[in-house]
Image 1 (cartoon, helix red, strand yellow):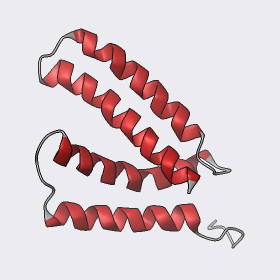
Image 2 (tube, helix red, strand yellow; image 1 turned 30 degrees about the vertical axis):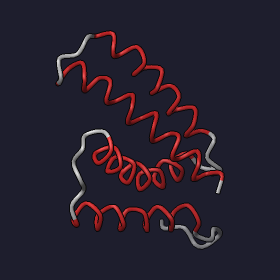
Image 3 (tube, one colour; image 1 turned 60 degrees about the vertical axis):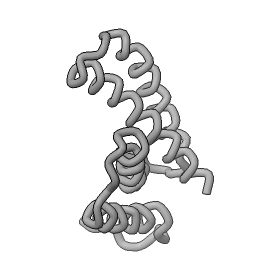
Length: 112
């Protein structure tokens, strides 16, 4: 459960940090927007290392589902655009995949 909290915190850092650059380059905001953006991206990287996983690649793969859902929440709450049914379906599929990666039993035969 602690991993989910770290994933959500990481997503907030990544989305917020990337949006700062989006605001500067696409919305013509001040370049000073990039300063909190860089801080948010550093926070993202630190939060992602706190996920309980013995392998970085597995932690990153499972994070993908959380990131997608968090991006749709951002779309809805910050950009005031409601996700449509295809957004929700796609995010649900991704969350299911992230759960399999994160919570699946380990120790089986690896693919080689």
